[in-house]
Image (cartoon, rainbow, N blue to C red; front, side):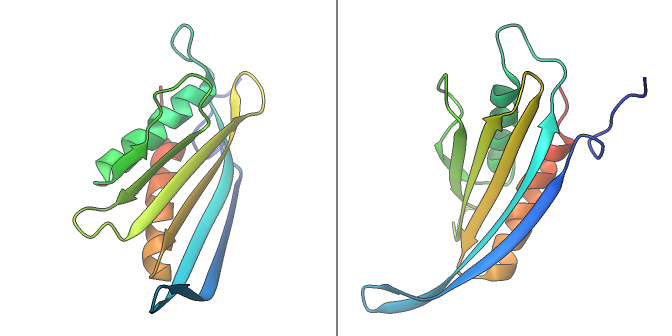
Length: 137
């Protein structure tokens, strides 16, 4: 049996959307939303840890690595999401990562990024997703 690589363990779908003309008081803004989904396989975890918990830890680590303030950490049992705002000091992007168990080793993941600038949202989404895809236990 061949050892799997991060590329073998991932099926990806990427989508982008722009919501035009959102009013925020007197301000008008374009809200750009990029998301991508994939399945990550975690064949080994620590005792009493699930593949979802490991994936959430990868997500939180990615947010912190790229200088995001994490406002929804991966610290609760039964949690399925991690979220943060950054990168500091501008904090112009909000990212949420949701992890859903498929079975004991496979986790479906969606990485979503939202910002006024579409390119920034896309780049941040890609950074966080790549960190999670390449994460190993």
